[in-house]
Amino acid sequence: MNFVRMSRWCAVIAGAMFAVGCGHAAEGKKKIVFLTGPPSHGFGAHAHGAQSALFAKLLNENVPGVQAEVVREWKGDPAPLEGAAALVISCDGGSLIVKYLDVLDNAMKKGVGMACIHYAVDVPKGRVGDRMLDWIGGYYEQWWSVNPTWEAEFKSFPDHPITRGVKPFKINDEWYYHMRFRENMQGVTPILSAVPPDSTRERGDGPHSGNPTVRARKGMAEIVAWAAERPGGGRGFGTTAGHFYWNWGHNQMRKLMLNAFVWIAGLEVPPNGVETKPVTAAEMGAFIEKLPANGWNPMGIQRMLDQWNKE
Image (cartoon, rainbow, N blue to C red; front, side, top):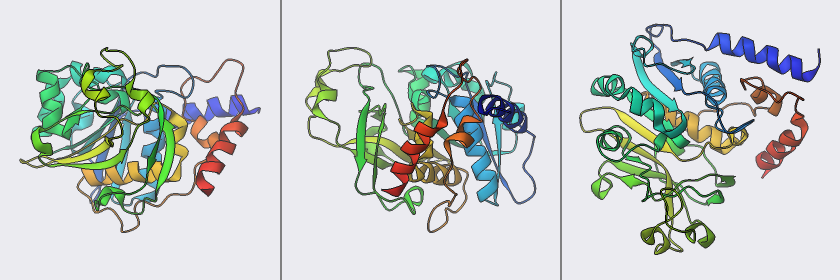
């Protein structure tokens, strides 16, 4: 069996394993449900289902207190959310949040945790944006936030369970920044902050490109991942990372994300964070729904992962 056929076969098996929610978690376990929109942007980008299946597999294998499940291309059915301790949303343009706002709000009112990854944080200002402020503490507001691609370097971290065991690192991604946060950052903790290149602030005005406030902040650090606690109970996490699926192969990025999922579910993050074995490009590729028709070679991606993880 050649690599392309093997990867597709593995993807079918992986999809079957994590396709639907299974009701309440097993006794003594916290249920984390990953809700995804369809993939977009081509191979290896905005791979919502693939990244969710990867994270769910790693949580189930490495965190005894978690039962992680994936609902690919969720249609708003509340049944998979029953008994959930936390929800993780991955979709384009916050589409799942906009479409199923009331279903999600009902879960949040029960104290369920929520994490939103990359494009899922981009929602309309007003009713939906206000809910995001309540749920996770911040969101991407068009004409206020921007979405350039740049290499962010993270030199230090706050003392927070999500950062346990995470070492300084740098990585290229479509790091949105200048998010809209709760007033006075009430209950919000910056998790990842870095100084963007000045070039990312020099684009013209637009819903995603730039604005005078962003341009006036040259040389200042920007928050690209954050944690929040809700006064009535429940925890939230948002990150603007995640355009490039392969970035989850970076040991530090992956640990931070797994720590965040454990934290929003109300579990104690281990002192050294959630430990996992390095993932390979081939393992990651097995979760992608649609591989290129002419196949793909994981060796180049594997070299990138090896370089990251030896630094």
